[in-house]
Length: 168
Length: 224
Ligand code: HEM
Ligand code: FES
Image (cartoon, rainbow over all chains, first blue to last red; front, side):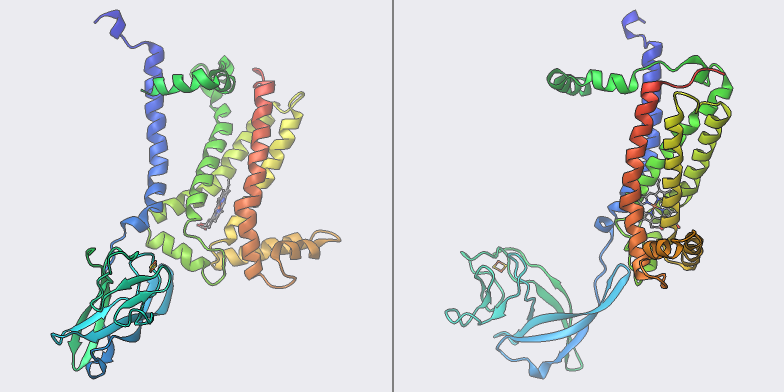
């Protein structure tokens, strides 16, 4: 071996000390970092479907229905209220839309703007959606309103989690 | 790569003298365990610092989940320990570290005492060391209440009664600490939390800085 390639005693000590120190620091920090990022790595399990309203009440006009779910927020459990806009479309299918605007999360309302009586309207930045929940191009939202998972059992409409849809 | 980054900064702000002044100095032979094994007693100060760093880091991370409120404190500690990944380890580091730091501090103090290292000109650093010891005991006392379980509650009850035994102003001290003349409750927990994570760590940093500056100025005491 040429003299140039030889590791000096000082270098050797520097390397081993850095290595051992790095190992100790990593051993100390790894559990804390994993602890801190845990919320990002937690898997979300889908909620149960909940009975919301009798199908007889559902018309061709979107109506607001509310129901409560039990929400577990770490050490805090509470009942929270959920809202959906529900109607029957021309094919007699039940459509249940989330009222949460896909722009920045305000709450949309059906036909609340006199100029657009057949659309969902968001008061925050004048976002609009057609009756099927698709965002109107040229208004701030970039994706349609999420749609709730739903099921009809014994004449009752059951709703689950809202699923986002691809942008129009 | 790292060397070039270092050179780039150094060329502009001349950081070499800064770290040289802090880190680059000879370890005298009588302090080096490689020469005399018994010199390991000089490690206790550094070990105290090391465990303190663990306490500060693990404490900061615990605060991400902990809530200082009597309704939720216990539940949040239970949650962070049982449900969060590595929660048991991070809480364990803080829990056991709190005792270990006192042990190290005590061993360090014994070394300084039996070597007479506190003598002139180092009397002031002894005094700072004693203040550090009290701050550390304060951290242990205030931290112990935070999980808000039975052990925590009654330990604090006892501690407050001891404080109340102070002549003349005992009751005032107790109220000041507990936040209420008779209840150990909501206000006690928020006070202890504030003292534990803000006031005492601030005092700790100031005193530690002073302690280390004095060591650097006066050097380590000579061989026996
Ligand atoms: C050297 C300093 C420290 C000592 C000796 C110390 C001591 C303690 C003790 C004895 C407990 C009770 C632990 C248990 O019963 O499991 C505790 C809890 C706690 N400490 Fe510290 N602590 C220190 C520094 C810090 C710092 C700097 C922070 C935050 C910035 C912090 C945040 C907490 C929190 C949030 C708890 C409640 C969680 C739990 O009980 O596990 N601590 N501390
Ligand atoms: S949040 Fe609805 S338009 Fe901006």
